[in-house]
Length: 627
Ligand SMILES: Nc1ncnc2c1ncn2[C@@H]1O[C@H](COP(=O)(O)OP(=O)(O)OP(=O)(O)O)[C@@H](O)[C@H]1O
Image (cartoon, rainbow, N blue to C red):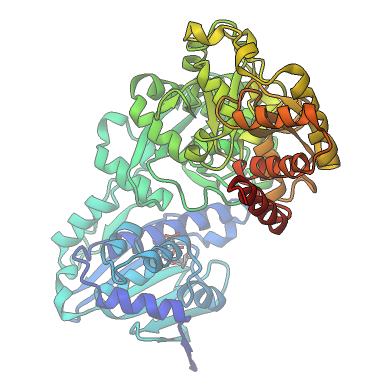
């Protein structure tokens, strides 16, 4: 029998080095990981056997068996699941192909302390955790439906061997040659305790094999979601969440319920505390697993939950779908559509309850997942209004979050629209010149910083019949709004601002100077302290959104903007005085270009010609210094 020697992928070697030398005190987790793999392997075979019953070869009682030998210091974890062939062994046990371990390695590379041992406990390192307690690991395995068995062996020090082997039936036997320090893992009471703690929820029996033949099932062996809620402890839910979702946080909400009526199913759903690592993956894959009468069918199907709920994990077990349903048949299945609607409604009502009763908790949830939930505003028309009511926003009203209903309740007399400004960060937005007039009138403005806002706003358009309106687009309509401060409402323009005629002269000369680089120049009622700002026209795209779209290559060109000037600003007044006397003087030309560049800088935009800007600024400064 030939034995092939192979080297672990470099990442695996590094990982093994950390696992073997780690001081992580909770070594028990290795058993959780191996039992969980064994149970996954049984789930896989159970599913495959729906279409090909012959794969079971008469062995359909899935179980995990634990065998101990305290003379040789050996613990074996055996299952009758799907098994592995040679290619599987090389792919699965020589590389880092799996999510849990990949997450661990990623977190490790970000961790300051390179050997942050706690990470092992948080993530679990899957199969490789066997090397925390064993000096040598042998895996004997045979894939269901194949004839050849294989033996994989390693001491975890850089190499492993693969050779042909003999094995009756299909499945996998993992034999751990425990190091002297870990003899305890051949003790029955230790195994009993570990299985109860970590693997009680596993849906198949975990059986301790005994020499006297009185084998003992150590776990409850019924799928957790099929048990009554009252029999399940918080700890059990948490363990299930971690195992089932490969998560390392605690769930924020656990929702366990039975849907009855036209469609019957059990849902055990978890809302996470932390963002899953793949939340922003373009695939937008979900984490909910579908079972049909306790048989695992598929995970993350689009037809089970809409993508805007992709952070929800857990299990849905249906009574109404046929057991022999294939993953392909799930698409557009009417039963599944009803389940999807039911789940979505249930989750929405849980979120509504949290939003009303635990606003702090809900806000933390929103900070993590709000940008994903908002995808539902343009993708899920049926639930749009409910999502809109849940949504939280930053605003100029206070540092915290606000709902739209609260915003509306604070709207001023005469205010017709819900105003917003969008950009990359809240602090920079708060300093935008376009907000000045709104601040002066005490009008609240929403500060939107999620790229997704540019998608839902145009499609939603309104809340409670009030239009959403960008403060960087179109006219500001501020004249109709009553100010908090009565004095502000007086038309003090006459004594305070440039005269109409001189302002017109200035506007005309700025237009000539700026030519096609600007769409229009006009007097502003949204500025109070800045001299000028840029605005998109009524029909154009919001200023910041357009820039964001350009960054993401969704538009080719930024369209020309409108330059608004503040007639009450002393610089504008002085320039107007000059313009009415001599519209052709060169200083007006330079001033127009400088005003435009200044507005661009305030927008956070790069200047098209910084050299000319600097030269003009120098000239103006020199003049100002009287040279
Ligand atoms: N008992 C087993 N039977 C069949 N295949 C197994 C068994 N144990 C491990 N494997 C295979 O080896 C792979 C790697 O296992 P490992 O525990 O390292 O990661 P994993 O379980 O995939 O990770 P994660 O926990 O993130 O899903 C598994 O995905 C599976 O394909």
